[in-house]
Image (cartoon, rainbow, N blue to C red; front, top):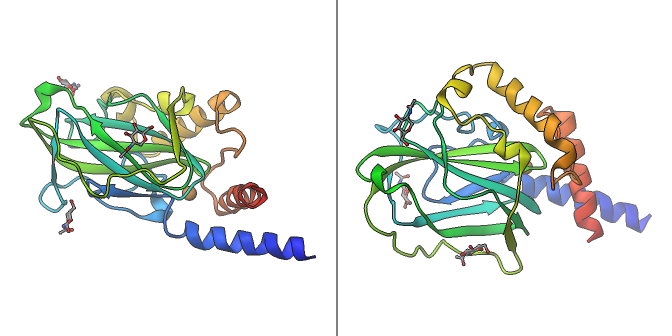
Length: 230
Ligand SMILES: *[C@@H]1O[C@H](CO)[C@@H](O)[C@H](O)[C@H]1NC(C)=O
Ligand SMILES: *[C@@H]1O[C@H](CO)[C@@H](O)[C@H](O)[C@H]1NC(C)=O
Ligand SMILES: *[C@@H]1O[C@H](CO)[C@@H](O)[C@H](O)[C@H]1NC(C)=O
Ligand SMILES: [Cu+2]
């Protein structure tokens, strides 16, 4: 009885904390964040618009990407493109990196191809999470040099990270051709990729799901259950 009350309490706590976001971009600022639509590729439902976005200088010699994760485990893919329509042509900036542990995670020195200095561009984050792939984009000016340290750039105590092979992230469409069949079909392509790679994924313990409410609650419920057992 006490145990089940505890579990209900845990579920509530997780639902509440989860409503703060699947993940937040701490630095540079994202072009937008909508918790409910963060699973919409390629930018979590937002459109790049340099006349309105909070545009940051990003140093090609290495600069900061700081996130806050609300999942006990998430695998990050950092990509960039000079295509301001964000229809594709992504270049991976690092191999997929898996964060284990909640909250702050920061890569202090993410490098960009040197020849991109002087161009506007978009950095895209794709996070493989128990809720599916989550997206945010950053509108940036690529500039020469190395970025200074940012106080927001830190790793939560106890958080660990390793480079991993993530078949779901590596099967995301990267080319303009692959992504431009978008509209309705990006979702299909993504979920096909998701379900095909499911058995080999490191995150299988949490299970992947579609983005329906029921599935979401189920996944959150099981994640909570696991979290509460720990
Ligand atoms: C733009 O982002 C910076 C962080 O890099 C933040 O300090 C600033 O308040 C943001 N500006 C607006 C208008 O949101
Ligand atoms: C893709 O981006 C590269 C720069 O990395 C550029 O040289 C190339 O023209 C782009 N291709 C397309 C199809 O936009
Ligand atoms: C956070 O952890 C990653 C992976 O271990 C590491 O590369 C990075 O430098 C750490 N960030 C900070 C700010 O120490
Ligand atoms: Cu989530």
